[in-house]
Image 1 (tube, helix red, strand yellow):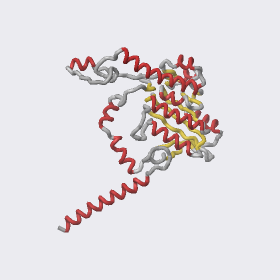
Image 2: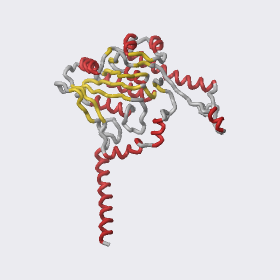
Image 3: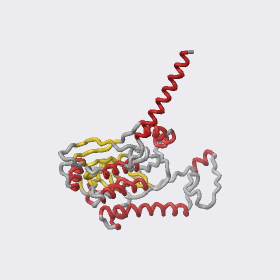
Image 4: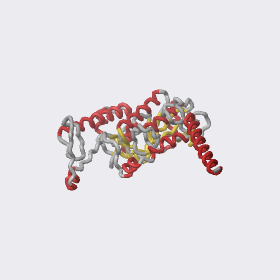
Length: 322
């Protein structure tokens, strides 16, 4: 009997301890006004190259497909992740300038535009921005880069792909072979536009093309303003093709050919801070943040779609798809 009471008391103690830990963790991540999310801490600063002054150049990596992040996972090239880091650089008085390091084929229209707008805001607040292109910085990646003061690329970078794409799958023939029929009840002729169980009508095709054209016009406007190009010239260059870094420079889409060292030197020069250090940011998750995001990170259906190369949301994208 005594043993059972001891075991029960031990379980209660463990439960109480767990609640205390969660309570402490909850208060340790309460909003700090950093603009990076209600349950997210500031990013940890990591030294990349130490200078002799207190000034810093913050290097922010945009790696992988760019996506909107309503779940606030703060992972990869999500808009919340990148904008959070840009906010931290903006709010740090010791950060004199920013390098946006791009290794991306692009992504959603909304996320690319949101990150571009934040890049422009950083510049308007007096902190110069240099875009650094890696192997690939295409479509939405170039959209973001066009907001920077200067763009540095390797001669062998693949960039450009100025354009918009939307792909609507059609399973009509496959469904017919399997004997699958879809009964559709709708309130208007366009309510099921884009259905994968039938071909597009001409009216539907015109509808989607109008949406694509609107997004493309926005892309042309951003590049024309950012690169100081005539819109007609931007449209001529923006037929969706990929350019090498060398070709992009010849066409006025890139300013310099070089690597991270050159981007760092250009950022220091633009910031008038020749002895600045180079730093980067890394996410710092507390216990509660890990618990809150565990379900999002381990989502079964999300993982399956990602592994299969299927995008979770339909819509237009500033994305290079070879």
